[in-house]
Amino acid sequence: MSAILHIVEHDFRNFFRYKWWLVGLISMNLSDLFIMAIVYNQMLSSVVMEEIGSYFNFFAPGLAVTGLFASAFMIGREVNMERRREVHHYMLSLPMTRMELAIGRVLSGGLRGMIYMSPLLLTCFIFLGFPTVWQLLVILAVLFLLAVGISGLSIAIAVSTSSLEKFITARGLVYYTLFFCSSVFYPLSLIEGLGRDGKFPAILVTLAEVNPLSGASDMIRSFLLPGYPPFSYASILNVVVFSAVFTFSAAFAYIKIIERK
Amino acid sequence: MRAIWFVSQIALFGLIASRMMSVPNYFQYYVAGLSVMTLYSAAIFIGFDIYEEAEHGVFEYLLSLPVSRKQLVLGRSIGGGLRAFIYVGPLIALSLYVIGAINPLSFLVALFALFLFSFGVSGMSITIAVIIKSSDRFDILMGVLDALIVRLSTAMYPLAVVQAANPLYGGLASFNPVTYAADLFRWGTGIETMTLSNPLWPLLGIIAFFAFFTFVGVIIYDRRIEGGGWQ
Image (tube, rainbow over all chains, first blue to last red; front, side, top):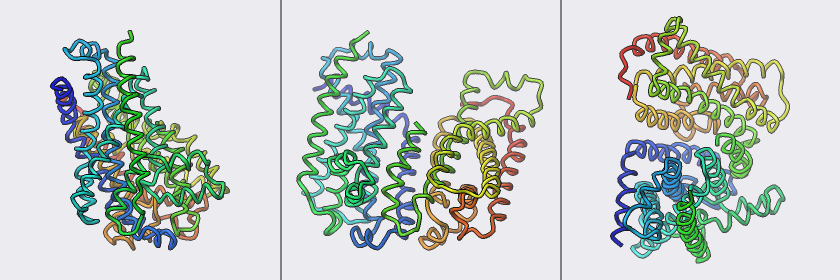
């Protein structure tokens, strides 16, 4: 356990080396909320307005999830850089098991995501209202699982790609597919409507429905926005399955691939 | 990465978000704005090159060349703008395909304005890079500036809507080079002929932006370039 904590400490020190960069990133996220969302509020069609009420309120939980995703994904860049610069040999020489090393990396990526996301989530609570204690615990637990799953996904991509360009390209594909095929920016009913009209591939509609980003965003909304969308256990299940799959596959990939010459 | 971002913005975000909006033809409107946003972020990149050159000692080599400082900064600014334009060219072509029919004469004027916009953004990036002389601070500042300058413009939404949402945002968006470039590009492609009756004002805005960051940039570059201090 102490070995895992050492790895977490190592990754946190790296994370806070870029504190000004993080401040810049948070200000960008907040400008999305306080500029883009406020302007979009004026442009919504009456049908969507009736469904979600206000775009600002709709987008605030999605923004917290977006911030969580981006920051938890950052661990992958570091792991990829370590692999390219062969720092992983040093990591492998540390007095700990491979499993402890892998779990430490996945866990620290997830915790970093939670730290980064917390001011965005707090902003969301300030404007939308605070949840009850139990709802807050559920939100934090689900977001933590999501962050760990994202961290695992980014590590799995990082160790499977040999160059920075390939990592960035793979990251871009995953980022934008998961972001835009989700209910982070728009209600799921819109994507489903496009699918029914034949204007959006069915596979992407299904992806949006099972996307853990949709699940986490809609879960927060169900607690904070009265009546929209209804709370669903399926959305939590999606996050749990995503987290379990990517945590274990990342740990396995990290252990196996990092030992290769 | 930028190409993936661009295509996914069109095929996923643009398509779905256009369903959500009451603005007519929002999809075409958004695609045109996206081209300008991409051009802006590509032209900004010249500033990062300057830090890389300073880090590898190429800067001193450039200073030793038999060209004046003015020629150097003007060349960098135009080169950076042109490079961005070539890079974003296929993406603009894709957006033109999505948008549809154009008036050739209007489009040429809009294209010329985009050239000037691209040179101006490169000049701005170079000016800020040589003033700050710290790659970390530059990275942060450009990130924040990018967030504000793009969101407080008409790249994603019409000016009337921005003004209705918040008069302060509307005021800032009215004096934003991204607004001028986006409005002119839409005018050139026939999207905004209804709302932009006179393209002269945004064209003058773009020319002023280009002139300021190219010629003021030359003076600042000239003063700040010597003496090292790069971080």
